Structure formats: structure tokens, C-alpha cells
Length: 294
Image (cartoon, rainbow, N blue to C red):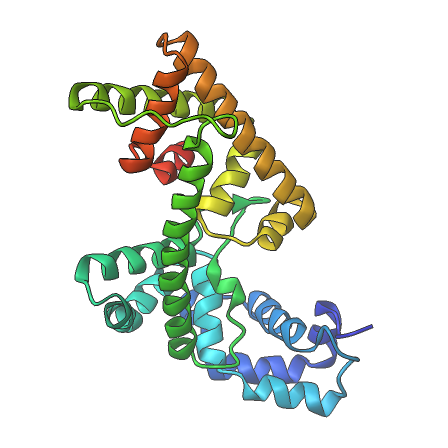
């Protein structure tokens, strides 16, 4: 056994929890003693779960080292308490925007980063009746300010990687079916706009016909920039399964898009290839919006 259970923590360390509860004063954010104990326990698991069960003095020393007020605020925000969110935004909004601006060096991009971060912190996705908030990864070992700065940095880097990954996705879907064939030159301007719209509609319809789980997998990987391992944990799949199913989805999309271009719009081989080539130069599709709409 690696660490005490929540029940053991509440029974054996009741006085410690009571003392930390009084220090953090989480009742101002409507965080109950039970929820506070659960937040402390999650921090303990994050620290000791890979080790042998800690001795009582080490466990108590760890609890005493935590930024318990910040931990309580994060726990209340995770549960969606309005008073906690007002407190959080009042305290941290200027610092978050400042950190994002220092990285992006552009106010519009900085606002995009902070908007993305607020959504992840609040938890827009629900699972098992509970929002999945980024706050669940804050364990109170550092101050909330320090942790948030690291999250801003991660969000900035992930945004860059997502852009690169979107470009890769574009190339995988828009590439011609079958190796070795010649690529037709881009069409003239009137045909260019028409081809782009046909491709956009074909890809949109192909995505709409995917199973919800396949759409979610694509969204997790290409839009939310999760790793294969993270996607696997969310969907209960092994990394290799995630990778294989992503590739299958890409292949299915390419085939369905080409079928629609041929049957719905009457394009022939050279026109299909020209359509793909045009898309590579002027990608007409908002993947995040399309996958998010489902």
C-alpha cells in the first residue's frame, strides 16, 4: 500500500485537517471540510503514491508545507463555486494576462491564451457528472501564482504545437490518394474558390459522419493538443490503439472526401488532385470549430 486512503486520512489525521481548515478558511468559498480533506488527499496521492507509505511525521510535515489557502481556493474553483471564481479572477486575472503577454508579445494572442486557460481551469467538459477542471492538477506544493505561470507557459507552447499539428493534419488529409501521381497546377482564381468550398463541404460532411468517439479522439489530439497517452487515459485505450485509430480515421476521411468530390461534385482525377493542391496552399477549414461543434 502506497498512501493512506481518504477515510484513513480523515480518521487518523482529523486534528491536522481541522488545523489546516482553520488556516485556509475555505468556508468563505463554500468548500466543506469533507471536500477540503479530499483535496488534501489528492495532493498526498500525487506526492507519495509511487513510494512506500510515508511515516506519520513525514505525512504531517508534507501537509503542513502546503499552500493550503491556495489549495482551498483551487478546490472551490474546481467545484464551480461562484464566490471562489470571483476571488480567483480578482486576484489572478492581471497576472495571467501579463504572463501571457510576456510570452506572446501580442495582446490578441495573449487574450487567446488566457481565454483558453480560463476554459480549461473552469472545465467545460463534463465526465461522470463532474466538470474536468485543470485545477485538479494543482496540489498546493507551490503557490497558485507560480503554478499558474507554468500553466500559461504550457498553454503557449501547446498552442504553437497545435498549430503545427493542424498543419500536419492538413497535409495528411489534403495529400493525393496514391503515391507517384503528378500534381496538377493550382486552378485559376474562379476555380480556386470553387474547389476550396467543395473541399470544405466534403470534409465537413465526412467529419460529421464519424462516430462521436472518433470525433472526440481527433479533437483531443489535434485541437486540444493532448499526447497519445493522455488521449488514451481519457478514452480508456492504450497509446498504440489511439495512434492506430487516429490513422484509420485519417484514411477514412481522405477516402470519404475524395468520394464526395467525385460523386457530389463530379470531379475527375486531375481536378481532385488540383483541389488537394489548392487546399495545401490555402487551407479553408477550421478544424477546431468543426470538431467542437459536435
